Length: 94
Image 1 (tube, helix red, strand yellow):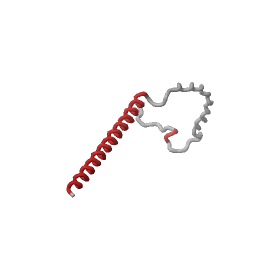
Image 2 (image 1 turned 30 degrees about the horizontal axis):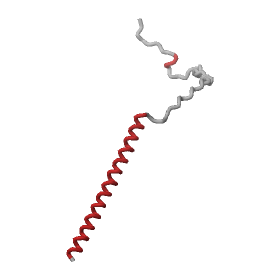
Image 3 (image 1 turned 135 degrees about the horizontal axis):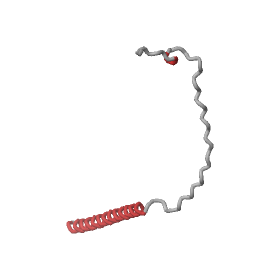
Image 4 (image 1 turned 180 degrees about the horizontal axis):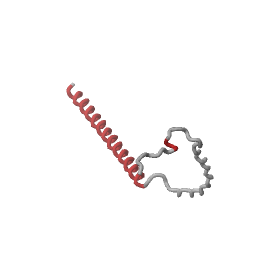
């Protein structure tokens, strides 16, 4: 029994006489016709929740604007009352 390794032809480091195998060219796949997609069902854009939230936001903005305008009107009317009262006091003082 021999423990000496026998030389292999591919491990000698010398170029082999047979050319390296060329990989086979890949065949082009035939283009398949895709089945026509069904038309999507028509539905209104957005969701009902989005519509409800938007409506509530608009109503909130209207309410804030209404409260602000009424507060401004009250302040202006109070200011006019104080001016007229001050004018009356000024007339009495003269």
